[in-house]
Length: 367
Image 1 (tube, rainbow, N blue to C red):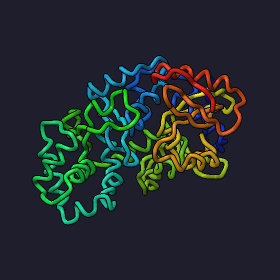
Image 2: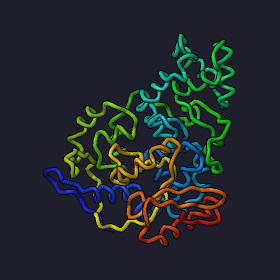
Image 3: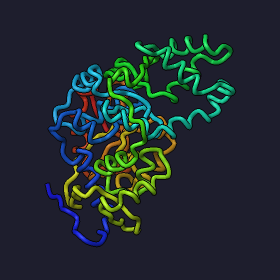
Image 4: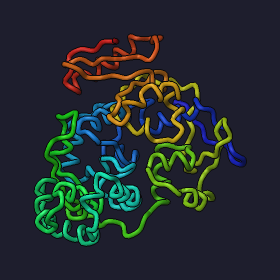
């Protein structure tokens, strides 16, 4: 596999195809890696885990020989936690990374409390007191959200108990119990247990926002990227100053439209002519959500095509490095829906058939 080091000196103009191949290379989508699942999770920073089964598909498509029990073991051993993180959505994160990542994105997580969903139930409530009470209730034990809500309802009578529990989950770093993240469900389970993150992992939460760490880790897995790209991935605004502070330590390039792209200095760029095999991506995969300008992996036309369903998650497949359509699991069949006629439908079906035993499906077909 050919890779090249960027030249010293002035900025390099990077084509969209080089950005595409570099992203796929860093995401282990050009060739499956033999690295351990924990190392892959750490490199990717956070793997979207909004619904239980999708992270497993994301690791299967990246790791050679990946098995369900490998991720389940990491979750049960508390090396990996499931919780709200970047973009205020549920992700799987290495326990040591969660300790700095959650504080880094705290403003966007806490901002949800301004939503009308919470407004009536927390209006007039001292949020510091609510957070303290939540910690007291959870200290030394794991409770379902319903159990947590009932305990909070006793302390704050007249309020919607479940809404109080949800608010505590935004105010305090909590993690979900293992049953929420094990293989077997394509939709969220009805009963999710929560625990105090520090007690669950034994890793103290960082006392400050380590935004520089977040930016550098993002660039290693998703770069070269613009400030707006970092912000779109993290859900955090006002990172321009952070990136400017890092500028002397970063490589600075430009894309074909003249936008500045930042990268870690030790990283290499992939050649534009590297072959990119068919890959099946899970719903919510960060390779599709990790940039403001997503044209390095999906055309604007196709992004708009799937945008109406995006909030519910859209599994997609890559052909020659770019999104070529979507797929779905229905009644034991993988249904492949190309956006346009496929140049090599056999290659797409072959990869779909490799996925079948992993997800418990029987057949695959193009529709």
